[in-house]
Structures are given as C-alpha cells and as structure tokens.
Length: 184
Image (cartoon, rainbow, N blue to C red; front, top):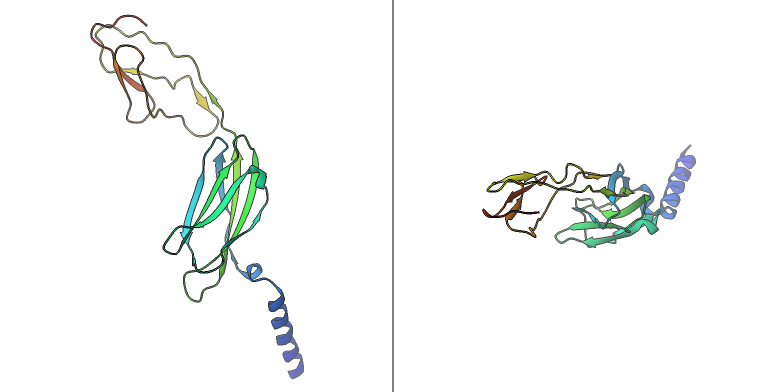
C-alpha cells in the first residue's frame, strides 16, 4: 500500500509538469457581448498582475475583428475588441492573466463576441411651421428605425433662417424660426 501511494504521488507530479499552467487555471463564466459592425470598439478593463506574461490564448474567428490585450496602468489590463465593418458572426476569445492577490496564480477570461449588423432606415421629414412660432418640436426620428438599439440625435444645424437645438433626451429637434421667416 505504501508503494502505491508513492506511485500515485509520482504520477500526479509528472502530469502537473506536462500539463500547461493555463489548463488548470480558474476558468470564469463566459462574458457575452453584442457589438455592432459599424465601427464600434469594446473595451474591458480589469485587475491583473502586469509583471507576468498575460496573453490571448485563442481567438475562434479572427476575420471578424481585431483584439488586443494592453496594460492599463496600475495593475490593470484592457481587452480591446474592434469588429470589422460589415462582418457578421460569433468570435470566442480566451485570455490568460495573473491574479493580483497572493498567492498569484493564472486566471482565464472567456469573451464571446456576437458581431451584428446595424441597419438604419430613415424616412423623409417635412414640417409646416407657423410664422412667429417658438420652441417647435420636430419629431424627426418618428419615421426612422435601427436594427439594434435606439436612435438618438447628437447634433443639428439649420440651413435656413432660425436656430435649433437637440432635445434633452436626444429624440427630437427644438426649432425657433426667425420672427420674419416664411418659406421651406
């Protein structure tokens, strides 16, 4: 029995020396992220020991986007993923990094990026504004749609007489024509 115990200990030590450290590192639950293929970038910053080798272990679909792992300063890492414009599909990325708490040990993170299409459909907008009107709300997004998320207005300019601003929630334009304005 004593010899069998020594043999088991020897086999365990032998196997541990052969198996790479990342195979017994702590695996986390996958992080699922939906990203648009229209020029967006995803960044995740997390605590990690930066004095060790932190690396991307695998990327299942490199044709869908670029991924980088960079030091963020102060024992942090950043995973940055930028999808290729127009690409569609799912990419799984596994990274290995080192914990900042003692005893330091390898950890893994699994990211699953779902790269989706973003299609914006717009309708024509025409409004009749009464002479002398003020703070006219133009609901220009009412006949527009997008396949993912919500549309918002970020800036606006007026090509004819008057002034305009974006509403507080970004869903309309508030227009103030000059007092003597008439026309389109």
